[in-house]
Amino acid sequence: MATLSPEQLDSLQVFLKDWLRHSGRTQSDLRRALRAESIKMPALLEELQRLHVEAGLGGVAERLCAIETQWQSEEAVDPLAQLDLDLDALLNEIREGQKS
Picture 1 (cartoon, rainbow, N blue to C red):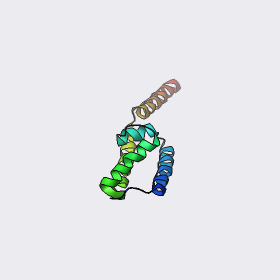
Picture 2 (tube, one colour):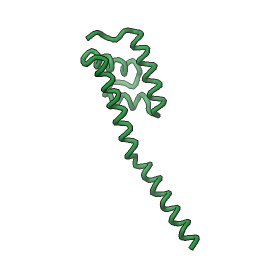
Picture 3 (cartoon, rainbow, N blue to C red):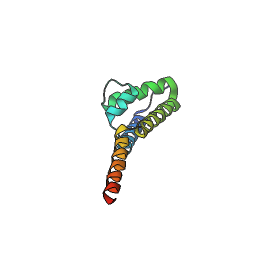
Picture 4 (spheres, rainbow, N blue to C red):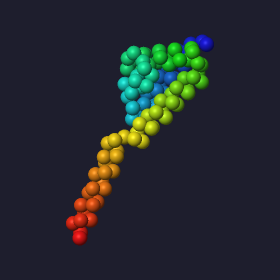
């Protein structure tokens, strides 16, 4: 497969920055998910470029979709979110006890 053109790499970089910002993630999160060597954007793009050579644009899209799914599942089981729910329930019980 051919490598991505400079224009495609620029578009991919803009997309990644927007995606990370909207998902509340960082380049460090993406580095871990891609198992890239560095959090710097050129290293992240290099890893995606390597994937493009191996699997094409569809492979890049599949990998990014899998990362998004992974991140969403991590948020769903966030222990701090569960702690917030438990604290809210405890506060409600205390308030109910004070009313009695």
